[in-house]
Image (cartoon, rainbow, N blue to C red; front, side):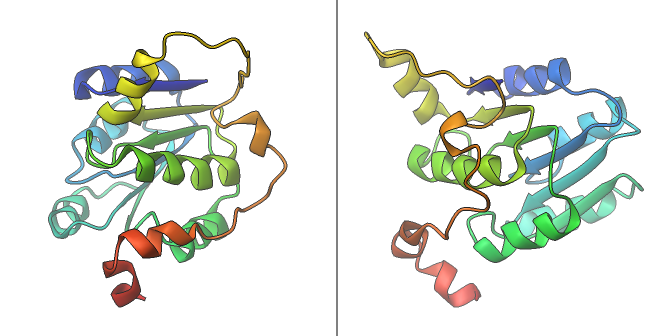
Length: 178
């Protein structure tokens, strides 16, 4: 199942409704860990991998010391980051994506594509106003393509996708960080 929201309270509620103890949860865009703290409080037996590359994230996330949490300070758009996490786990139950809430829906969708088609989550929860606004603005669709998991069925057997070249074109800082 794939869920969309913009309101952070709804986003967190969606995660809490879908997650269970013993899940493996990947949180992309954990920032200072407010959602991570909720996950840690509610799912003590779950493995949580939280990623963010903002300077504010490192200090706050390092204050959250739990055996079931691994914080990775990295850019989720980079293929190296995807491979590093894939080396640790090959599958997750829940994929949570909150990359700025309302900015860059195209980037958020591409991050969703590469991470969900790699890890094949049961559920994906995305917080992004642009994608939600687009979805809610569609008036008619005569074709019925639906996916039952937390990834798109059309990418089911694609393996780890190729690096998306637009990430480098749009974000010059990615070249400097390599």
